[in-house]
Every structure is written in C-alpha cells, then in structure tokens.
Image 1 (cartoon, one colour):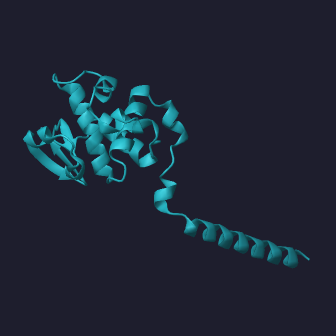
Image 2: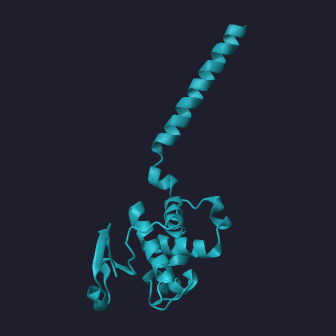
Image 3: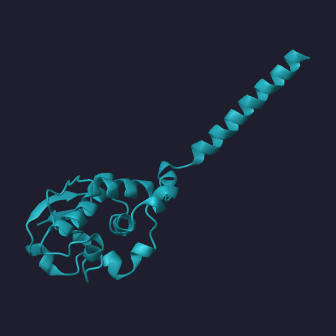
Length: 160
C-alpha cells in the first residue's frame, strides 16, 4: 500500500513539474520584465517621475541606453543652465517630447527601466556629462545638430 501511494505521489510530482515547465517555456523574458514591480510605489515621487520619463523616452533601448537618458536628466539638474530639481528639468517646456505629449502617463516603467533610473540617480553616467540627447530619425528641430556629439548609445546620440 505504501509503495502504491509513493508511486502515485512521484507520478503526480513529475506531472506537475512537466506542467510548470511547459507553462514557463511559453513565456517570453521580455514579457516577464514588462511589469511594474510592487515596490515602485515605495520610491520617492521624483524617482518615480524620472522612471516614467525614461520609460517613455527610451522604451526599447538597451539597459545602458536607458541609464544614459536618466543620466542626462541628472546632468541637467546639476547644470546652472537648467532647473535644479528633477521635476523642474522634466517639466521644463519642450525639454522632453514624451512629457510634452503626455506619454509619461501612458508608459508604466518596467523593472529594467526602474533599475536604469536608479543607477543614474546613484551616479552612473555613461554619457560623460551630456546635457542633450536625440534620436536622429525623429529630430524635429535642427538646432540640436549644433551640439557637440559625445557618443551614441542605441538609437540615441548624446551631446553637450
């Protein structure tokens, strides 16, 4: 009797393992990162605003590209040419297309975007102090070409 119960339990465990494996193999890694973690709401409001902006401005960019967009925001906060708060920089008129069109409220930041935002907030700057960035495929104002180019990351060009 004990051998029969043990055998049934082993079969049940194998079937459950196979079922769980089958379900997980259909999931896409990008989809598992495309959610906003519960702890997002425990972050400071300025960090949440920055993460929403990075999500809307750099969606689809590699991790370092998202860090770079967040770093430009932090560089502007530190620059005397721009407002001295994160909110002031983000809401500055015509500074960010995604803010101007309200896209920051339509894009919930993913786990990757929040990590990138926090990395820049803590000091990582892959742009070497850049104050501007643009996507050459979507430039609407030619003045951006007067800026000195620092580097390209993903689809964005970063400049002083």
